[in-house]
Length: 378
Ligand code: MG
Image (tube, rainbow, N blue to C red):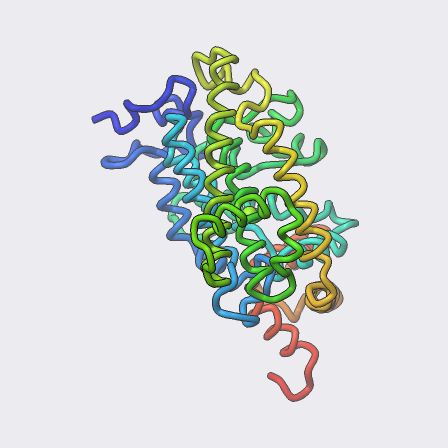
């Protein structure tokens, strides 16, 4: 039975996959991309996402997004759009669920701190780390390290990449050197990520009290939908009005992305996934919606991500990550044996320390920091 018969000719089809690094027999009851999604869900790194910060640290409140709920929202949005465009829902789901697997604890603060620590050792990029998790760091299968995912899933996970790193990565790095596009599914997962975080950060920002509706009313896309909600439900209460506004914003972004991408795809006259790779980016918002999305993003950066109360968390997170890194580099014998590099190769040791820290949940990093630096904690 062909589980992908409904897909557009330019979608990613399992039968045309560039395959796995370690060849495996085809799955009996699933497509190759479904198998990848299942492997991702069963991985250790996936479960860790529950205790990794998106913007607000997990213990600040039970209702804020975590990396896990964020990834699920990305997958939901990406699948809705994929079905409309007859793209491969299983592939976009796999990419969406895996896209943040390599994220450090404490969100972007953790990533920046670890990148700074790794400056002399090739840097640290969470996006590259997500690929490293699925290629090497998961130890679950007898025949190989990592999850042995298909090329198309790995290509989708590697959203950005410097040319220096691209050259070291082989097949998945090649498109950055050749300036080619990834599958439409990869392009889509990327924009679904943006739709998800822009909207849920508005919601979490309002819930935390760091953002106010009065501020957001100044932003076109929010103000416009908020007025629609008030016209439809006069006197609607605060929380309900926020949810109604945000669901309308998400819907408007999704509908715009579907319509605009359909036009782009049609104009490009695609026959196959090879045509996709040789075309420009085709999954994109209309020009008008791109402007609105940029304004919302800028608003969030200036008012939420750089809010002084968020800065306090960011600063603490930076300290925890860099102090852990220095302590382990000065005394690698503090590390469990599988993270120690007996040869004394400093760059390799640094990479292992980065793997260890990047794998930590927020609370594990805080506990580890206390264990190393507090005298009365063992
Ligand atoms: Mg994300």
